[in-house]
Length: 192
Image (cartoon, rainbow, N blue to C red; front, side, top):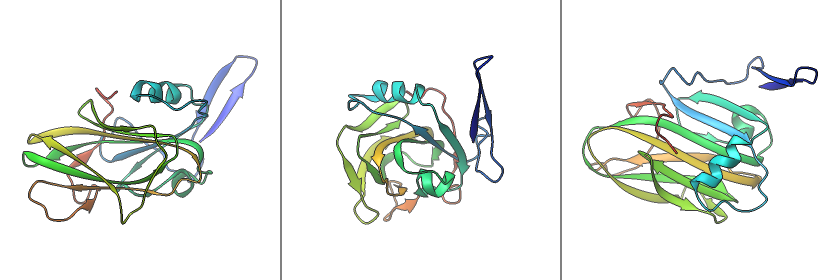
Protein backbone atom coordinates (compact mmCIF):
# COMPACT_ATOMS: atom_id res chain seq x y z
CA UNK A 1 0.00 0.00 0.00
CA UNK A 2 1.16 3.50 -0.66
CA UNK A 3 0.24 6.43 1.54
CA UNK A 4 -0.24 9.79 -0.13
CA UNK A 5 -0.39 12.90 2.02
CA UNK A 6 -2.04 16.08 0.87
CA UNK A 7 -0.36 18.88 2.81
CA UNK A 8 -2.95 21.46 1.82
CA UNK A 9 -5.81 19.45 3.28
CA UNK A 10 -3.84 17.37 5.83
CA UNK A 11 -5.64 14.22 4.70
CA UNK A 12 -4.15 10.76 4.35
CA UNK A 13 -5.30 8.49 1.51
CA UNK A 14 -4.40 4.80 1.47
CA UNK A 15 -4.20 3.33 -2.02
CA UNK A 16 -3.51 -0.38 -2.63
CA UNK A 17 -0.57 -1.08 -4.92
CA UNK A 18 -1.11 -3.33 -7.93
CA UNK A 19 -0.23 -6.94 -7.15
CA UNK A 20 0.15 -6.34 -3.41
CA UNK A 21 -1.82 -8.59 -1.03
CA UNK A 22 -4.70 -6.85 0.67
CA UNK A 23 -7.52 -7.79 2.97
CA UNK A 24 -11.17 -7.19 3.48
CA UNK A 25 -11.66 -7.22 7.26
CA UNK A 26 -15.37 -7.81 6.80
CA UNK A 27 -15.04 -11.03 4.75
CA UNK A 28 -14.21 -13.26 7.77
CA UNK A 29 -12.84 -16.07 5.55
CA UNK A 30 -9.13 -16.29 6.29
CA UNK A 31 -6.21 -15.46 8.50
CA UNK A 32 -5.65 -11.73 8.84
CA UNK A 33 -1.93 -10.82 8.72
CA UNK A 34 -1.11 -7.21 9.55
CA UNK A 35 2.27 -5.45 9.59
CA UNK A 36 2.75 -2.09 11.29
CA UNK A 37 5.83 0.11 11.20
CA UNK A 38 6.72 0.86 14.85
CA UNK A 39 9.54 2.64 16.61
CA UNK A 40 9.95 1.48 20.19
CA UNK A 41 11.69 3.79 22.67
CA UNK A 42 11.07 1.43 25.62
CA UNK A 43 9.79 -2.13 25.84
CA UNK A 44 6.02 -2.49 26.23
CA UNK A 45 4.90 -3.81 29.62
CA UNK A 46 1.55 -5.25 28.51
CA UNK A 47 -0.86 -5.59 25.59
CA UNK A 48 -2.14 -2.04 26.16
CA UNK A 49 1.36 -0.66 25.51
CA UNK A 50 1.53 -2.73 22.32
CA UNK A 51 -1.88 -1.47 21.17
CA UNK A 52 -0.71 2.13 21.73
CA UNK A 53 2.31 1.49 19.50
CA UNK A 54 0.07 0.03 16.78
CA UNK A 55 -2.32 2.97 16.96
CA UNK A 56 0.56 5.37 16.29
CA UNK A 57 2.00 3.46 13.33
CA UNK A 58 2.77 5.56 10.25
CA UNK A 59 2.80 2.57 7.87
CA UNK A 60 0.37 -0.35 7.74
CA UNK A 61 -0.11 -3.36 5.48
CA UNK A 62 -2.72 -6.07 5.61
CA UNK A 63 -3.30 -9.38 3.84
CA UNK A 64 -5.87 -12.13 4.14
CA UNK A 65 -4.05 -15.46 3.92
CA UNK A 66 -4.84 -19.17 3.87
CA UNK A 67 -2.09 -20.30 6.25
CA UNK A 68 0.14 -18.99 9.03
CA UNK A 69 3.44 -20.19 7.60
CA UNK A 70 6.51 -18.27 6.42
CA UNK A 71 5.03 -14.89 7.34
CA UNK A 72 7.02 -11.69 7.63
CA UNK A 73 6.86 -8.25 6.07
CA UNK A 74 9.48 -9.10 3.44
CA UNK A 75 7.78 -12.30 2.22
CA UNK A 76 4.24 -10.90 2.10
CA UNK A 77 4.65 -7.18 1.38
CA UNK A 78 8.20 -6.93 -0.02
CA UNK A 79 9.30 -4.52 2.72
CA UNK A 80 12.22 -4.80 5.18
CA UNK A 81 11.67 -6.64 8.46
CA UNK A 82 12.85 -3.76 10.60
CA UNK A 83 10.90 -1.83 13.23
CA UNK A 84 7.82 -3.94 12.60
CA UNK A 85 4.87 -5.26 14.58
CA UNK A 86 3.01 -8.31 13.30
CA UNK A 87 -0.59 -9.03 14.23
CA UNK A 88 -2.24 -12.30 13.19
CA UNK A 89 -5.94 -12.74 13.95
CA UNK A 90 -8.63 -15.25 13.12
CA UNK A 91 -11.56 -17.05 14.66
CA UNK A 92 -11.71 -20.83 14.72
CA UNK A 93 -14.08 -23.58 15.72
CA UNK A 94 -12.83 -25.94 18.42
CA UNK A 95 -14.55 -29.19 17.54
CA UNK A 96 -14.01 -30.61 21.03
CA UNK A 97 -13.50 -29.29 24.54
CA UNK A 98 -10.17 -29.79 26.25
CA UNK A 99 -6.55 -28.69 26.12
CA UNK A 100 -5.58 -27.07 22.82
CA UNK A 101 -1.92 -26.35 22.16
CA UNK A 102 -0.37 -23.65 20.00
CA UNK A 103 3.16 -23.94 18.58
CA UNK A 104 4.57 -20.44 18.04
CA UNK A 105 7.67 -20.09 15.85
CA UNK A 106 8.73 -16.45 15.56
CA UNK A 107 11.37 -13.80 16.06
CA UNK A 108 10.41 -10.92 18.35
CA UNK A 109 13.26 -8.75 19.58
CA UNK A 110 10.97 -6.42 21.52
CA UNK A 111 7.78 -8.15 22.74
CA UNK A 112 5.18 -10.78 21.90
CA UNK A 113 1.73 -11.86 23.07
CA UNK A 114 -0.90 -14.52 22.48
CA UNK A 115 -4.51 -13.63 23.20
CA UNK A 116 -7.30 -16.21 23.13
CA UNK A 117 -10.89 -15.07 23.62
CA UNK A 118 -9.85 -11.65 24.96
CA UNK A 119 -7.51 -13.21 27.56
CA UNK A 120 -3.76 -12.68 27.36
CA UNK A 121 -2.43 -16.23 27.75
CA UNK A 122 1.20 -15.39 26.96
CA UNK A 123 3.09 -12.08 27.10
CA UNK A 124 6.82 -11.49 26.92
CA UNK A 125 8.92 -8.34 26.76
CA UNK A 126 12.05 -10.41 26.09
CA UNK A 127 14.01 -10.93 22.88
CA UNK A 128 12.65 -14.27 21.64
CA UNK A 129 13.70 -16.35 18.66
CA UNK A 130 11.74 -19.61 18.49
CA UNK A 131 12.68 -21.65 15.43
CA UNK A 132 10.40 -23.97 13.46
CA UNK A 133 11.97 -27.02 15.14
CA UNK A 134 11.84 -25.49 18.66
CA UNK A 135 8.63 -23.44 18.89
CA UNK A 136 7.16 -21.99 22.06
CA UNK A 137 4.26 -24.23 23.10
CA UNK A 138 1.30 -22.62 24.86
CA UNK A 139 -1.60 -24.74 26.15
CA UNK A 140 -5.11 -23.37 26.65
CA UNK A 141 -8.27 -25.04 27.94
CA UNK A 142 -11.06 -24.39 25.43
CA UNK A 143 -14.70 -25.34 25.29
CA UNK A 144 -16.24 -26.66 22.10
CA UNK A 145 -17.26 -23.77 19.85
CA UNK A 146 -16.00 -20.56 18.28
CA UNK A 147 -12.85 -18.88 19.65
CA UNK A 148 -10.83 -15.77 18.79
CA UNK A 149 -7.05 -15.93 18.28
CA UNK A 150 -4.62 -13.02 18.21
CA UNK A 151 -0.84 -13.20 18.06
CA UNK A 152 1.40 -10.12 18.20
CA UNK A 153 5.17 -9.91 17.72
CA UNK A 154 7.35 -6.78 17.67
CA UNK A 155 10.74 -6.99 15.97
CA UNK A 156 13.37 -4.27 15.63
CA UNK A 157 15.58 -5.98 13.03
CA UNK A 158 15.76 -8.92 10.71
CA UNK A 159 12.68 -10.91 11.70
CA UNK A 160 12.57 -14.60 10.82
CA UNK A 161 9.35 -15.87 9.21
CA UNK A 162 6.46 -16.75 11.53
CA UNK A 163 4.82 -20.19 11.61
CA UNK A 164 1.86 -20.94 13.88
CA UNK A 165 0.73 -24.46 14.66
CA UNK A 166 -2.20 -25.98 16.51
CA UNK A 167 -2.98 -29.32 18.12
CA UNK A 168 -6.42 -30.31 19.38
CA UNK A 169 -7.07 -32.41 22.51
CA UNK A 170 -7.12 -35.75 20.67
CA UNK A 171 -4.40 -34.98 18.11
CA UNK A 172 -0.88 -36.39 18.34
CA UNK A 173 0.89 -33.86 16.12
CA UNK A 174 0.84 -30.14 15.45
CA UNK A 175 -0.42 -28.89 12.12
CA UNK A 176 0.19 -25.50 10.55
CA UNK A 177 -2.79 -23.23 11.16
CA UNK A 178 -4.60 -22.91 7.85
CA UNK A 179 -8.04 -22.64 6.30
CA UNK A 180 -7.50 -26.16 4.92
CA UNK A 181 -7.06 -27.96 8.23
CA UNK A 182 -9.07 -25.81 10.64
CA UNK A 183 -12.56 -24.27 10.54
CA UNK A 184 -11.28 -20.71 10.41
CA UNK A 185 -12.24 -17.12 9.74
CA UNK A 186 -10.96 -13.79 10.99
CA UNK A 187 -12.37 -11.36 13.45
CA UNK A 188 -11.14 -8.45 15.52
CA UNK A 189 -14.30 -8.07 17.59
CA UNK A 190 -13.70 -8.13 21.32
CA UNK A 191 -9.91 -8.48 21.10
CA UNK A 192 -7.62 -6.29 23.19
